[in-house]
Length: 220
Image 1: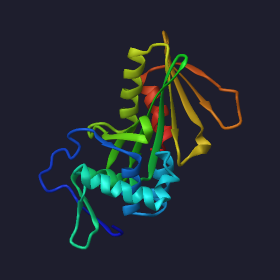
Image 2: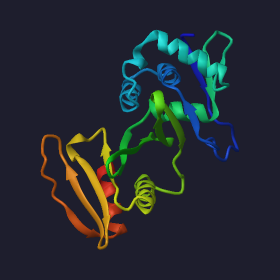
Image 3: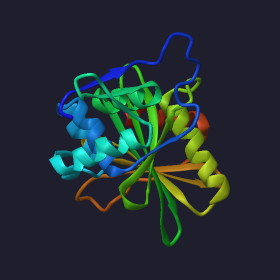
Image 4: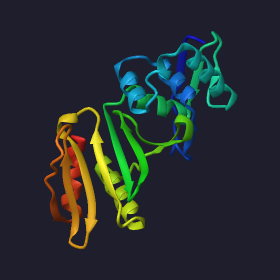
């Protein structure tokens, strides 16, 4: 299976991401191999599968797994064919112009993370699980990317008041990593830059001010 094609969601489709889709690392490698190029290479790095995405055996195993799980079919010329939600995930990853790492931090532990991936057509959220597996879901279409991050961070800190969050756009490392905490006076933010342990904190931000910070770090 060396050639690939996609079938876009059909007309009248309301939500191609009705449920979150789970992908193993080999399946993701196979998807990215369908549309090789700089964007797919960068997405592989963001998904932590750089080596796997360039391994032919892994890609072949992933293609077989996609077919076995009903996430792809084999075309007349033995090319891999994907459609609907899987095609949307492929489009987002292979045409992405924005990849944002979001850390949902907890005291004394690793916390959780989310990868926000956006292309001109699709915006998705991916959450890592064990063994380099990822769950992909749609970003709420009624929200901007920054609004989705604000809702995500607010929800996390509602349940983990002593926790925090970090936001980093992979395409613009020079902007640093935005760190966020909540205190009685509102939001506290600071920026962490590579090689610099000093974090200049600002306190007392309201939701509107935090949204502006999230919009800026995302480059909107």
